Image (cartoon, rainbow, N blue to C red; front, side):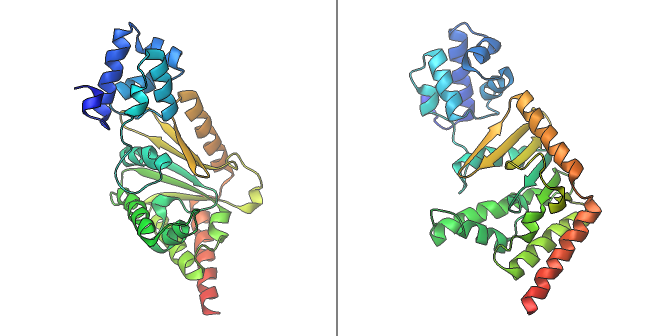
Length: 275
């Protein structure tokens, strides 16, 4: 089946890439050099396990003289309401065996309560209709389903102290949110570490990063900025993200001390509700 017959399918997309690569007399390694992509990434695309970025698709079109086929028929990124730049990371998150996430300003989505997530979604620009926010909220809350299984994935959370101190939605919302994180940490469903203000500058100051490991695929990193995000798969780049995460983790409070700080800040918010 040609890619045109089944648009949006990773399998047909991968089959088409393999067919055109072999017709051009190229190995995966040779194509990777010409298209400025890793051989592993090309192998995963051909196997239907990964979705190429728009830039990847354009380079494949150019190298294989495909007339724009690979750009026009990029596989769909997933179902449900989610920012396009995060769709691929969401799919990978559901397959991961280990996730290590850093939150510089906000609680990572996988840990957000309904009230906190609602406040975050309402604060974005351009403004969203209530219906749009509801769709995004459902998708965001569904991410937490992977925490229902106690052992998989293993989740490490590194939070800047600013996440605890920024009053998203007011004291009641923050109190509930922080106690939710503390409960997950106290039951050891997740590991929690806080980077206190006293650390000053650290290796992850530049933005959001999420690291993911898999049973039968190479690890990836997801980095995000304002209205943009990207899954990184080149091994050397992923390792650099891992090293930065490990360095910042070395500056963070222990799991026990982090939970104590989170509980203390939650109590401050609780007292603020009574004033």
